[in-house]
Image (cartoon, rainbow, N blue to C red):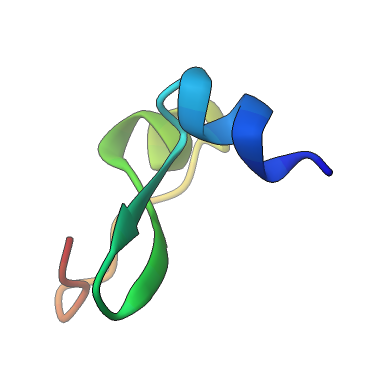
Length: 39
């Protein structure tokens, strides 16, 4: 239910592997992006 909103806001993106958090999501959560994280 919340996925369309999060995609529209640019916090997650759809990829062939599934859904991934964007840079904007990590910044919003005030968290560092893991070194091995792939967008």
